[in-house]
Image (tube, rainbow, N blue to C red; front, side, top):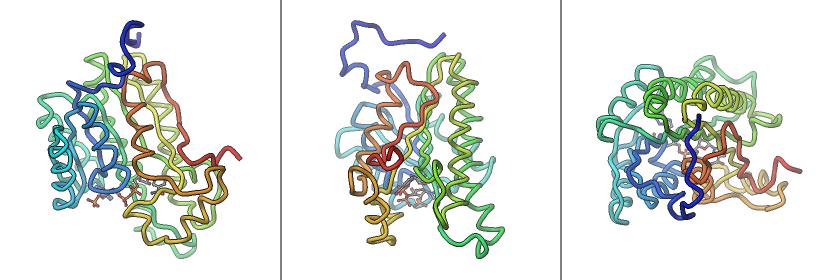
Length: 261
Ligand code: NAP
């Protein structure tokens, strides 16, 4: 049975992550970095991961400057072996346990189907599906043994509807959407909650090159603007915390309402 916070616990205590270790992939940039900072601000010891050591160390420095705990674990997440190695390193750095996993690392090359190479297809599936799959495989069983844990996957609104040139990316994230629900079914009974945040267009280093196209993509939603990484991070922190104790297998749109209308 899933553990639940006491009725007498204060709201602040329910969002506190003191004593938890959180591994955040893609934490050298954008949504992952904002999430790492937000989790650390709630008291989590955050294992910051990404490929770029300079930017990884910068995220850790920002966490520590704000009085939090963070460490960098470099990883090029392309296959099962790299995911397993990162899980092991995170466990070591985290004092033997990882309580929260945020799968934010992702790549999103857009383009016509006929111009896409087999290597590009394999590359997108490797980072967006294979790596989260084997991180969960490596970390969720230990969370289940301890009877608690939270996993938050970062998907996308274009996993929900067809968009020209975004099929490969959207399909990879649609796989992550289904995995989120499957893992909720598999690990939820042992106290491990698995959920996802589905961002709309968000200004990050990764989308900087899109310029005004990002505004146009966002304009169709009620909010009428792109999101900020910090707005994604707040939703991720909620799902990672005990405030979301009864939330399993949810795909939370944080897209300015774009998929609602
Ligand atoms: P970003 O600024 O481009 O950052 C991507 C992160 O993923 C970086 O930290 C990068 O690490 C890491 N990464 C990429 N390839 C990797 C690999 N092979 N191994 C390990 N790490 C790797 O992206 P973002 O905009 O913040 O997006 C974050 C997540 O949100 C992605 O999953 C994306 O699909 C999703 N999303 C974004 C938007 C948006 O509009 N921004 C919308 C919907 C969903 P290094 O830089 O250190 O290599």
